[in-house]
Image 1 (cartoon, helix red, strand yellow):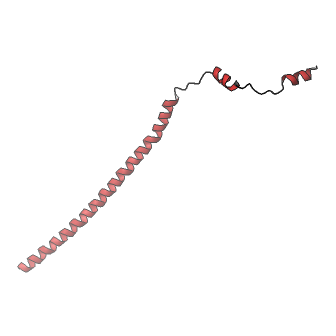
Image 2 (spheres, helix red, strand yellow; image 1 turned 180 degrees about the vertical axis):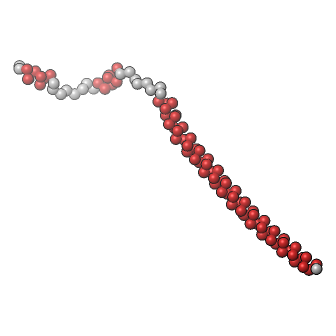
Image 3 (tube, helix red, strand yellow; image 1 turned 180 degrees about the horizontal axis):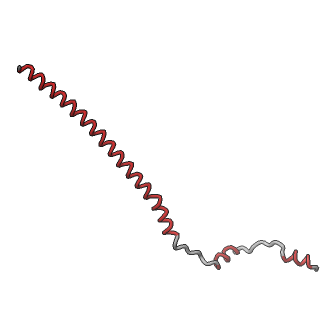
Length: 97
């Protein structure tokens, strides 16, 4: 045999044995990532806290708007009642004179 044939024979493609992947993975130490849960929790908090603050602000703003509207309604009712009372007082004082 010449060198070229020997190389061809040595480098020919062969399929892997049936349990090759399992054997290789059994020898590789499992990667431990103790930093992963704290980072995931930090990312979750970084997303959730601004969302919660935004929702709180939105609710408080809605409550303030409702309170403003309720006050405006109460003032209109009070103004109407006062106007009626003034009119009654004026009518009664005209008749008394």
